[in-house]
Image (tube, rainbow, N blue to C red; front, side):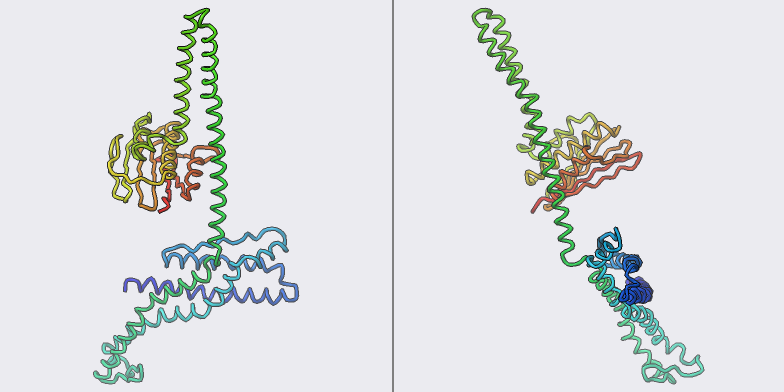
Amino acid sequence: MRALPGSIGYLLVGGLTAFASLFALFAVSVVAAASLVGVGVPAISEVVRLVRPLVEFERRRAGRRLGAPIVVAYQPLEGGLRAKLATVARDPANRRDVGWLLVHLFPGIVLAALAVALPVAAVQQAAIPVYWRLVPAPPESFGITADSWPRAILAALFAIPLAWLALQVPLLARGQALLARKLLGPAPGADLAVRVAELTATRAAALDAHGAELRRIERDLHDGAQARIAAVIMQLGLADQLREQDPAASARLVRQAQDTAEAALTELRDVVRTVYPPVLADRGLASAVSALAARSPIPVELALGDAEGTPPSSMPHGPHTAERRRPAAVEAAAYFVIAEALTNATKHSGAQQLRVEIAGTADMLTVEIRDDGVGAAVETEGGGLAGIRRRAEALDGRLLLSSPAGGPTVVRVELPCGT
């Protein structure tokens, strides 16, 4: 009963779109007939373009009814006449649109009539005992003339099957929506083709990011640790030459070489930490993120949920108590996403407080970083947010950014865990 009014409205609107499809089919037929003699060929692409708003309206209606949007990407009608005609013929969405016009026309009108007639007939039939004596002529229905109380009550009993049929109207509405999804949804294989294109793009981005990371590591090693190690070798060589002539100078050079070697070791550790932090490998994601938060110049509140998806518990910087290890690639991506987001917030947001939340299920890890800064964060090529997106997409994840002017800024990353 609760679904009945909305279903009646859905089918009534379907009746209106059925009438609209009648005119659309008429236009398509006229253009097709004119094209046989060459006159209507230039209008083919335009009539296809004019049909699309009606079809898109039906997709939105059916998507809302079914609880899942129906998304179809048309090939753009661009270029000259020949290119447009080729696109019309090549795009399967156009053929499916015309098929929907044909199939929806008469059922849409019939279902709209039934959506109104069945409830009205049920109410009218049930009301016969109320009004049969008030009308000039005895009402007649289903071959029964209600000219007495027994006949009136007998006629009213037919309201029961009519009411049952009226209660099936929501099923009719859902059937119409399912038919629209079947006819107006993506062509078979279209989703797969889009998915392949997405994965190809993310794979290319991941390879580019990997290459850039390798170049950065090589540059850091060449300009830092390698130069310091070369200085150590030179200092030790000079110390060896001065050992007998000037023992004091030789000792100073050895001490300098020792200091330089320690600095090189520190730089090597920094480089290793940027590749895969040891604390992440040894103690897990929560402890690694706690260490990041402890080093942040802006106070950070941590909310770390466990791997089974239990509610997150707010806590200050410190070790996490219940954590099941995720795949190493996922943990590393989450760690560097948080590190980059904290760095961006420190540099640009002007925030007084940060919050990092890690949660999810066995199949999905979600990371959310929120700050109370000025907002208006924009993703730019080569920027930190673009790097976060590349890290997420390399694992078939996604980045969601919300940063209105005035704040707050929320960076949310979803990472599939491959389980």
